[in-house]
Length: 383
Image (tube, rainbow, N blue to C red; front, side, top):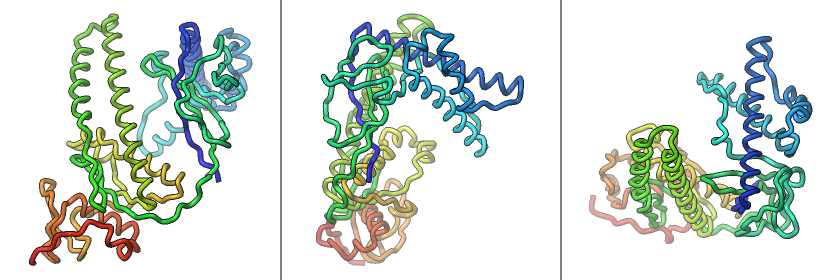
């Protein structure tokens, strides 16, 4: 069994190489827009819908007519045509669901990535630098971690973000670990005050940097709005805002990686609620829900558990905070009530931790008879 994983590294091109990479992305953007224009005109004039094969067959003739494209990797340019084809397939899928969103022409400033096949257009040298067809010299890579032993590198994506360059490898890794022995099952309730509350009583508070980042983002957005359109000061303000957003996203991603790694190291069976995050993000708590990044945390935990031989299960979230885990009685609560006080059996416990227990036993019913001593004991009062 093999798993497809991605490994991202920072690139350090010199000024000449950075200019070459920028020109390459600009040429690929022109190719993307030309292919989009061809599809539009073919349908308007002849009523014909072009596909990937139709345009890929003309790519060699286009390279002969355009010296810029002739200097870059042919397979990378095929991926540009394939990217447009994927955009059209996604558009047709949205149309079937009653939505729109026709593919648009791309600006060069927003065309920030190029796909390569490793060994065909992009090569990893013995000195651990990379070469790209059409880019002079070898580009330095910061290998902050090694690729897994025995891994097969299939593709690589060269990316630009806020003036910095990165490369992401898609790697097929053997399932070296296999199924791990059972350690413990846990239910996880995600929230806004406490980002994570587990069924054994552990809590992970929401990081404080989220509020600070939001305040700075508002200031940078106001500064950008005051700048004159087309001015150099607006470009600088736009870059400052983009760098701050990228830093915040990096902090959020790093925090999710650490929390998910801790969960996978401690538990072999992990249960979450199957939340409709898109629906929650359209309500009055949209900003807080998006800052919490529950979907990212669940996704990271899922793939880490799969690689470690564990299991992540999702349960129906309906009533998890209203139901009593001990007697099953449903006690309605408002969001302001943070204590579960069951009038049926007298259980008194923190609302989030009790909800995590309900999630755990919905996902793994057998766990109610195993490891009872590992769960935090509930306080009992007279009914």
